Image 1: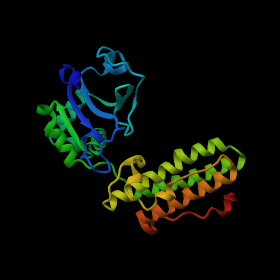
Image 2: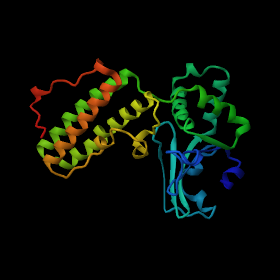
Image 3: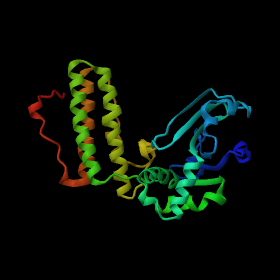
Length: 276
């Protein structure tokens, strides 16, 4: 933090994540929480490797730069003996450009910029603290946090997820049938369970309940579907069939609660699927 405050190439330094949330809440930091920051920099190439941390006397146990969960920014993740760091990297020129568009009232004419800002809004609405660059960016960040809606699922998007779930459900059962058990296990968690987490997050938001994406901290939120979401299995056909069917039942219930009779699970009898 001291380095970022003194480094000339860092034009904005913002703390985000659990460590800026109120103590005592379900989403507050605990002893196992990492440190989350956003950095807008004129030198994003500086973070391509770990040399900048070595200059600070911090030696990473592991260091990687990759796409962030929301997809519109790169994220640096590093493990240190002293703690764990997630650093969202934002090119200063792009951020300044979006800030100028916002001041001119021209953001709506820039779909790509709006997509990035909805991702940013999802982060900022969870809480943030500007540690450097407030003079230039505080007004813009307040605008994004209060005026830009965070990403949400429309009813059409819910129906599209449900259609995709059915396709992946059939594909997963086919894998189990032919004995591709590891592939089926991967498909189950990567596609079916992940879809249910997205649907549940949207349902909780629509009902005004507290929620984080990716099933984060769901165990602490008195979620009535918690037992149904738990997919335990052994690597055999019977156990996998049961797990897939359990996920399908959860999907049907979530979609029904979200869009009612607008979408119906199709009759798959003609496909002669084995689900037992």
